[in-house]
Image 1 (tube, rainbow, N blue to C red):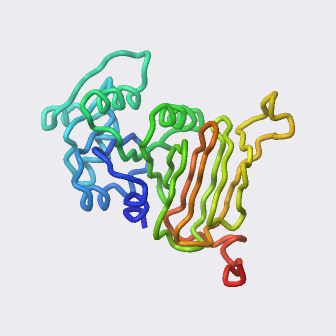
Image 2: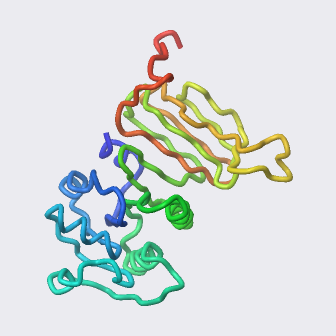
Length: 232
């Protein structure tokens, strides 16, 4: 279902790998045939999978040095930015955005939060991490031919106003927030977590702020999976 969701969202110009979960990389590279960029130590994983990165980029303190003899690389020693940031700047300057990003959740929780923050600083990219596809939404997005009962979550980052159509628990001009805000005193970290689709086509419209949408690309069995949608 990953490729179906990607087709529903837009077109991409590259695949960027971070040093995290690259479980879906082989299938995505095979089906899309996009330039493959590895951020520093991610190259170790990429090459171990039998794939050849078009470029290895970063401060190169984690990649196996023997790989730099075999593959193109760009060393950027600046310690004020992460390898993820370096890679995104390179992709932007070389017309390789938007990108499909894999491995965003590698490392400890502070690393994951920082990667998510960097991800949200750019528009139109998408990340794939295990069974979850994540994207930043501002404005209106229509998703087509997505299986009914697909699990998803919507977060205000840091806040947004959102309306949905085609979900089990619809949002109608709802204020979502990652934390409490002075002008939203009645909102304390309210988000739409673990929602479900009730239609193959659904819409999310963000009229103010920014939302982070997470879609599960595989069936999830939990308390919400047994809901009877036929009666809705």
